[in-house]
Image 1 (tube, rainbow, N blue to C red):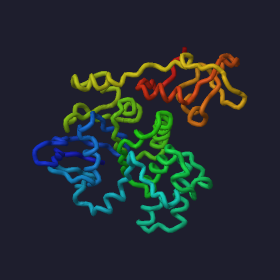
Image 2 (cartoon, helix red, strand yellow):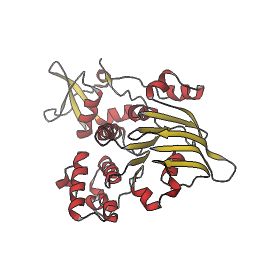
Image 3 (tube, rainbow, N blue to C red):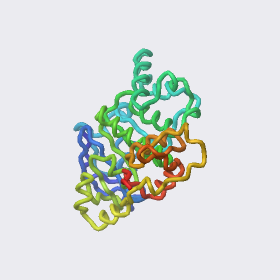
Image 4 (spheres, rainbow, N blue to C red):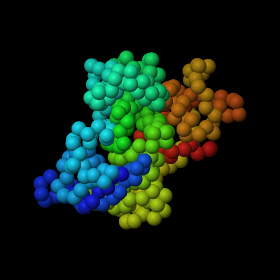
Length: 316
């Protein structure tokens, strides 16, 4: 689907930001580019849709050089999601999503149906959200719209440049789950940039770890974890090693009325905890049907922000 052949980028003809990289990305694959700041991952991403020109080498899409595609045709077939959501504030959600389909001369009925389909796909009720403006949505909801806008004209490839890094940890974890579920249904070719090794391990079919413009290792999460190719990769992986979250260690006293709170079992799974606290500021914790305390969204946000996300709740 996408092939990099000795791709190189230099901005000053001296320093190589991307240094002669070679790799192939299969159709329908979710590839994550990761590495420290300045490693060349975002530059690599942006060369795919020619936002940044190559200095040397070739990128191929479906056997054709990206330089041979008319620029509008290339970018129509490649969706792009940024960290800065960049929805047009004066336009409704439907109008934001419809931008590329309108440029491609879809009729109004097609566009209306597509907007309905996409909003439903990411759990936003079309009747509720299609006529709202971006400022009426939360950050997580806006980012969902940013994702489906990139899907609006059914592109073959989606590029995502740290799309969730500006969100709070609970919204970020929820959107990661949503993206995984979405990818299972749409099977697009996704190239995703992040600096978070836990995010990379969770999302990627394969992970490309970069350093100083070069590929240190390209492999599945299991391959990279079990057989790190270099000392840098080993250290980079270990830097994100999680500490399991034990729900019983974060119980808070029941200081307020609990009748209206959603309920979590003390041995609830990680995904269930995130799901409940993405909808409510606080939840009641029960053990064998008996209330034993509460847990707040702020407690979990503080825990996740400390870099200890475990991806699951250990039973305690």
